[in-house]
Image 1 (cartoon, helix red, strand yellow):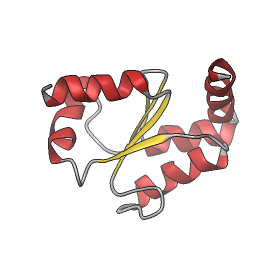
Image 2 (cartoon, one colour):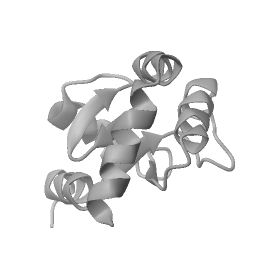
Image 3 (cartoon, helix red, strand yellow):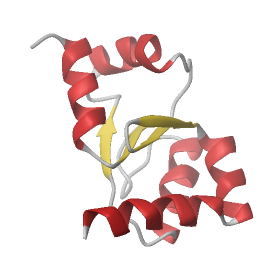
Image 4 (tube, one colour):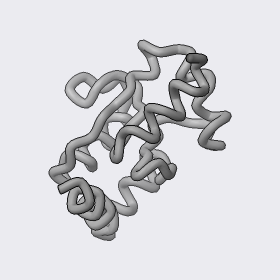
Length: 107
């Protein structure tokens, strides 16, 4: 499977997905750290992909998402956005709602 198909499959198979630099436990940039913290604060289970450990993903994801920067959050296969958008949604209470909707459909 080529990297584009691998990325698309990863997005499709994971209801809440974070492409980030590092891991939620050891983020490698402040934007990734704040985005992971917002998702954690929603008490959501999410999958992450460390783009620093996966340079092909880092190079190819922007072609799929039409979003040039990282981190990138996908919910139900749709790009939500990067750090600023995710934090704004969190502050408005909208991210929590989005995450709860995913959790309730999985139950």
